[in-house]
Image (cartoon, rainbow, N blue to C red):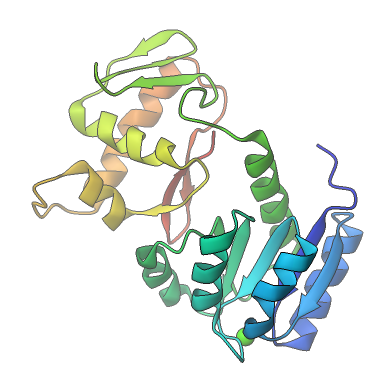
Length: 227
Ligand code: CA
């Protein structure tokens, strides 16, 4: 995929960070960038410029990143990567289900940001749908799943876990969110239970011939279906 001349909007009120991001996205990614330092300017700008992706800081003058993200989602499917200053914020952000495509924590390495931007753009360009998740097919009525034509023997909990993760490829789900989806009766289980089910799912996917890690752990956050 060619990233040349794709246009990234950076919304960040710290000039040094904005300049750093902009430089890296130019030099390492070949992107065009624009920069806004206030949240309340974003919606109108996006409407008239249609950027390909938005890097959105959480704490902003004018309107905070959460509100900006909500309003953007109401009008557009533009990929959004939220940037937060605190790891502790991330759980809360995930819980709000803002519809951001990824989250990055400060301090970040600019190299990592460029990699994440490319990954999000790649995912949004590939337009994965439920029918073709990289060779994975799930049949909800039959509660069966197969990868590249090979049947996966999944327990009901594994099936619902995989179903949740693949419902939005690339989106990070926290362990809490996954548990709520897995256990409809909300019984209290250790969040390590999620890790165990993921481990078993990975084994089954790899036995069925998955060549890459389809279920990615996102450090400190949870899991996502890489697709
Ligand atoms: Ca800020």
